[in-house]
Amino acid sequence: MRFRILFGGNDWVALCAEAEVDMPDAFARGESPAGQGHCEPWAKVPISVLDGVVDVVVSGILGGHTVSLHQQLPDGRIGVEFVGPSAVAKELGLDGEPYMGWTGLFAPEDLKDIRVEETRRA
Image 1 (cartoon, one colour):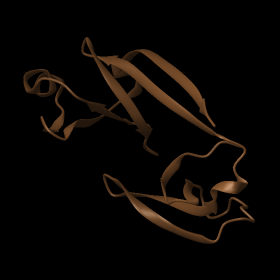
Image 2 (tube, helix red, strand yellow; image 1 turned 90 degrees about the vertical axis):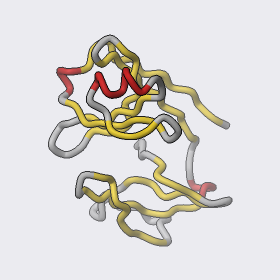
Image 3 (cartoon, helix red, strand yellow; image 1 turned 120 degrees about the horizontal axis):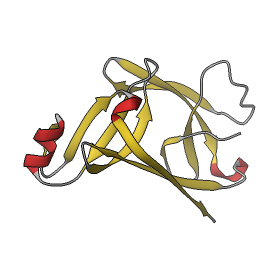
């Protein structure tokens, strides 16, 4: 099974996992804010129990500009991030600022040419 890594330490990671998902190696569970009033449940496990880590980068085109897709909310909207000119971010209807980047939530049909790149880490 694949799980998204939410955060971690030197020898453990917190995997995005609902409470009902059986994780015998979990040594702690909790929830982190996920924005827009949602929380993401997590389970901390030792890194040693993982078969590997796969970096997944997802991008798409929004209003003619490339954005990074970073999550899909339970209501179906997709959270995007953009690093670029303020004028473009405002044109796209994103919130944020030039130093930390811009974010927004969009319907899947607003995005075009979605690309997924996977890289396995040692």
